[in-house]
Length: 322
Length: 282
Image (cartoon, rainbow over all chains, first blue to last red; front, side, top):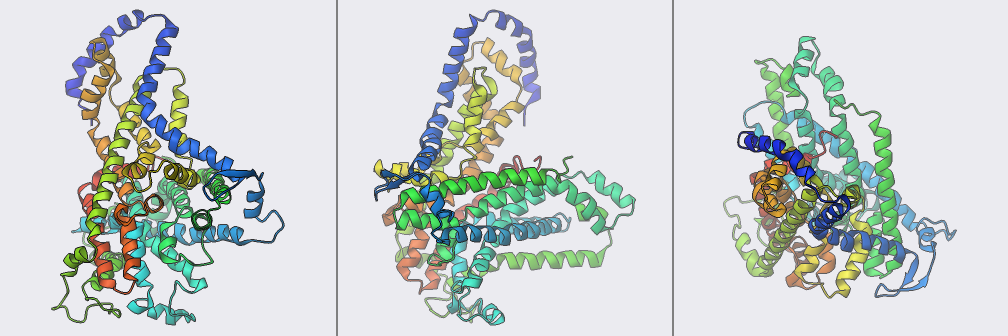
């Protein structure tokens, strides 16, 4: 990546001149101010965008969440934390639909994350075997990364559509009352989860494969000499050495799946039983309740940050870094 | 490697089993795409079969007809290209400048700058969505390229990636160039950028793919059909068709998948290093 041959004469010249350069420095404070101004100039494009589109809207969302808003999104009356109490059913009204959708989000994550990781690690193990044509299989296993959730959603909407007859056998097997898996409350969420798993395999496969390939071959060779079988090698070498990768996949996967929107929008837009992120969309897009929806979006933020910290804390202890 | 290292060379049943598993896995993973292709080729029927009944009379013209049925597909693809290219260019420029200052300049409050950049990764898209939508709507930027591009042209990930790469390049070279009277910007443009091509390529492929596949934001800030991006456009197309004619819908879906599939095949190495940045080493 770097070109040592052409650089080395210059580097030597640099180290020779360095002391001279620093003694010729002007007075400390004005130089530091000048450096800060120059740095600000270089950082300005990103800083302005972060300020306008990340930090300002984030604090505005907190502000809006404490107010009742009109249909144009202007705050009209201070509301305190009432929206938060409303969403979490702490106001004693007994309206639990939002709390239930948070639960649905977690159920969805539990359906998707473990399975997609297990399947991807299995595929990655298969893809490390050196056989003819393995590259083609690797590209196939990676391909879903290039397929947008929107395309995947459209295809799976038709897979689940009774008139294409693709899931008729499953409907019979499960003996559900309607001909559509998406139209039945008990099967809708697992159906969306199946699509999400399919769409997520590409990313998880790439990361798992890179993790496995980063494990030094000598460890396997010495294990083979010691007479360890395939399962023992996997259980006691691959899995522990893969644990940082696993931690990464679990954290990234959970955060990503809890933010899932596209597949719910395309597969079950009218379902009463949907995830929290989609309820937020409904509250703000269809009902124009910007204050309430802002409170919900801040709750999403708190859930994601808390979950990430907990996962790092709890799982970090079990992770084996080389 | 893990399995390969422990296997013996003449392990024929083992290799047979591996091939069988590989082929089954590949077919299962590809089956939704084959399903889409099968539906696309069966003509305008409301009761398609899983596999075409007559493989000799497949309706390949559907891939041309779809452009006549929905001429706006070309416009949607154009929109997506403008947006993805704009965001990618913006991210590369803003990240390189920011990372350059972080890696090479000595200025007070550097850690605050780094915190601001990485802190942006902690704020999820959902938490800023509503305010950003109100901002774009009030600025009159719905159905514009700036509304689709501007919010995404700074990236905490991009800054981190470029900074890590710059730190691997020899610092002495920078000091020497400064002593020789090379301007800071000239050094970035003439030395660092050419040396950083691998990192820039990684960031470019990663950003382009992510932007091309965006759905939620374009759904909010475009409502005129000609301003849709491909991802939103093909779903509008679905509603327009009433969901009754499957062949054109699946043909459109397969067509808009092509650019990213090509990008994946051509830029796989860059993409992999982008995705695994920070993953393997924890």
